[in-house]
Length: 115
Image (cartoon, rainbow, N blue to C red; front, top):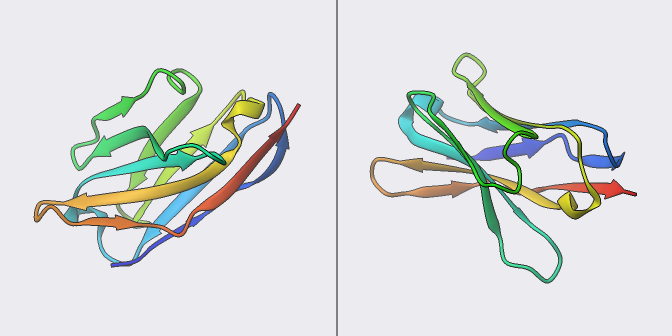
């Protein structure tokens, strides 16, 4: 299983970005998919999850600004990020977890938000 993350870039504070995570297998094989990020010198942190049934969960730091979504036809999950802040600067990773307790990670995509 491979996850290919893309969509990162350099934006100004207040702008938006959409991250994509395309899987090499059907995403209904995953119990859930998730987005994490890791800023320099900090631990990787969970941002949002979406289950195979479409139930979403967000951490407080991104609630109301970020939206996670999935598209079965595209074998992909997305993270729509709005009102970006400089503190959102990090490498963003997609993750997928299946019923056999296996975790898969994408390669990471850099998001840089300038003030």
